[in-house]
Image (tube, rainbow, N blue to C red; front, side, top):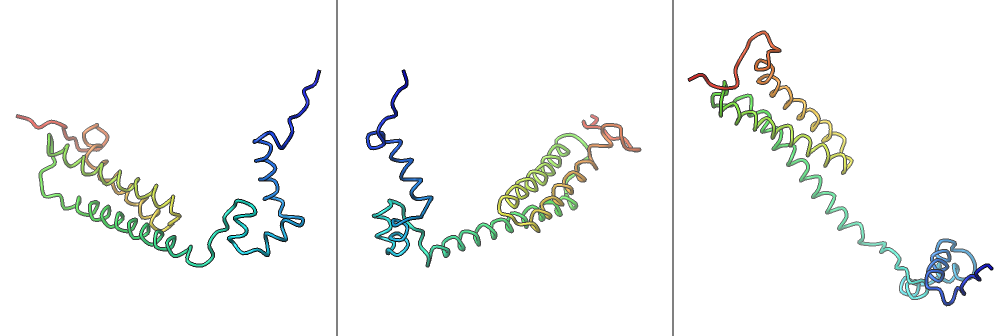
Length: 163
């Protein structure tokens, strides 16, 4: 025996679905009332608030501007770190000094990746390109120290300092 469908008036889910379908259609006499009514009346009739027209974009523009400035600040810091590693003032031939240098190089790669993800999310193509260059520069700096130690380069170096 088939179950009879519940009455739409008694089923809260059916009422919600009917209300949402009525909002989507926007046809018929209710749509004309909603279209011609002031925003406060639209909220009372449909239960849906209309977006504010004037002034709603000002906070969004400020947020976008702050995000862009923060992104460029990250780029400047990452590039400054990447360029300063070419003038590393400490010995980096072996041991803990080498580990410190490679840690700084890892920071260049990680900052480039962080900037790349943030710029991709914010749709900033130029910054994303600079971030990719920063990651590449970090890989070059790391390869300069790692390749001689794993036997790939013509010259050889060791990880540990000789005593």
